[in-house]
Image (cartoon, rainbow, N blue to C red; front, side, top):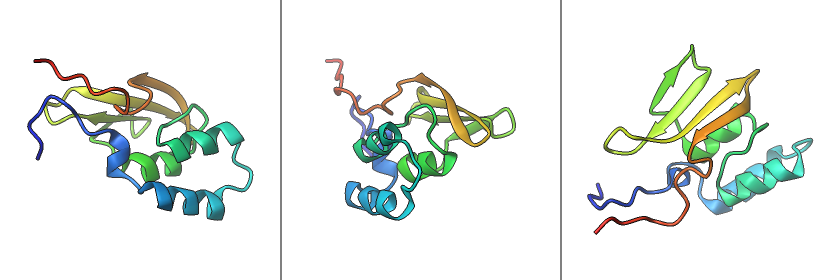
Length: 108
């Protein structure tokens, strides 16, 4: 495990970029363009299906509300991204909506 202050983006846990393209080719029918684009770029968007979130970020680190909220945390247990689902679609994002894929912020 990496011990720096930089947390790997959540997308590193899911499908590699090439396989995300294949996933969209195979499963993308009827998915709005903005959702497809977010998926290809490796982040979650409101309206995205639970299955796509799973493909992007893998299993959540913790769930609350009977699987309504998925939370992904770093190795210190601090929230990276939280996702609230309604009817198996992303209703709300909290924490980092881009799953930690922003600029690495090393604190020296």
